[in-house]
Length: 199
Image (tube, rainbow, N blue to C red; front, side):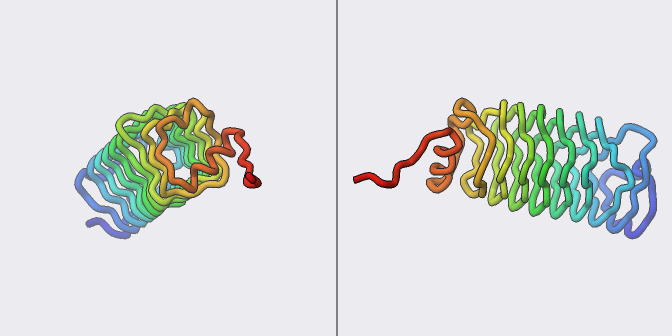
């Protein structure tokens, strides 16, 4: 384990754990493999076209950072600050976001395979035109005001999550896995009015 050190992202070694480190800017394209970052600070804010394989990021802050056109395989974000992060045009496979603050993230145009968000806040996020392969789960997440326009929710499980409003269309919700309580919200989202005064 490397602890409380100041080093460049270019010096990060595969298979190592970094705790409470200050990671300075990278001079090259970022490619991180089999590394754990715990409570680290990153000076870099532009991570576009980066690659993260078998990584664990715990208690790291990436507020409003740019991860456009990046790849995440078998990577976990745990207790991270991800508000406003641009994940557009990403490739995610077997990736997990858990116990994180991820309001207003933008994975639009991404390809997401067998990944999940759990116990995380995703208020106002943009999942537009996302291609979902195998599965995408939202377990006990805050999904209010999330935008799924252009994304098929077939097989997507949101049944344990919470929302009042969501931006979807009728053709996109077919096959989405929801709870009985959410069914009422979906009916109103689709413009159907419920008459409680039936006699």
